[in-house]
Length: 391
Image: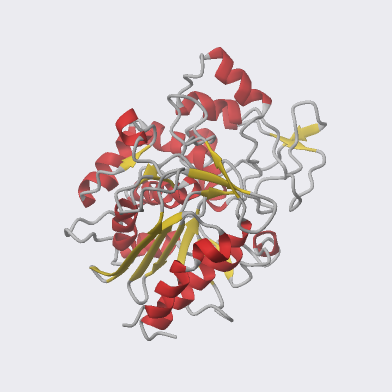
């Protein structure tokens, strides 16, 4: 294996894209075959990245949440096609906006004041996991704001997910695909089914079995001191504006977001991904999911009619499974059919390839950087396969 080209590309990220710092870990089987970090971890640009940093991984949290849901489905404690209202009664009578345009920026988010009508189709767990439920991603919506005020910003996951149910849906459940708060709702379902806080369930059933310790929803002051400096990409290429080390998707001091709540070390997330590419078995021999569960997790859920909603300009080769992208037809990509994973709002990138038992986890901390998804992530993927002689 020769990773020279990948290393050269990573070392160019600051000059080419302005990325202040990063860390990447690649595994094959149960071996770490590559690790490289660069740049700085502080706002002053004085402290080199050394691998001990913590990152807000935002939506890369979703892969963990979906793994937890699949555990409970495989255990027979809930079913993919169960109505959500079976666990969360407030989702029994949903409303659908009379008009909502998808695929535009900023998003066309329906409000309580907009005309709406009763939904004809119940939302199922599958719809939440596959992002076809009709929910939106409005974390500043009126029901959420009111719940924050009513609870003194201490709403629990279950309380806040109840508030999300008040928001009109963007479309009739099951008819379109739209990125949404569905995985946050799944976290509340997991709490109801397991009788545990979401974080407790993850700790007992995923993190502790795999020996993972560096996964947090609300980091302590000591942990916050290790957070990677966070930036917002500017309008011009390479522009970076320092921003506070905060996660706006943590909707209250007690809320545990299944969609975007976790901060962790690169090593912690890599250990999780390593298990997914090895039949659900970690390096220590612990099994968190069966191969059948992983296959179902990564199976495309979108029909030909809905698939175009997901296939944006840089995801034409992928479909969407249960909370993860999944490779359908590698036209230009070097990864095989069945490769799956997701990314995060600050540029985290997770890839799982059960065919070749390869995992990639890349972490950076720059919000609003669209080019990282269009150029950086695909190049990291393809240079990895070239380095391993799989191109």
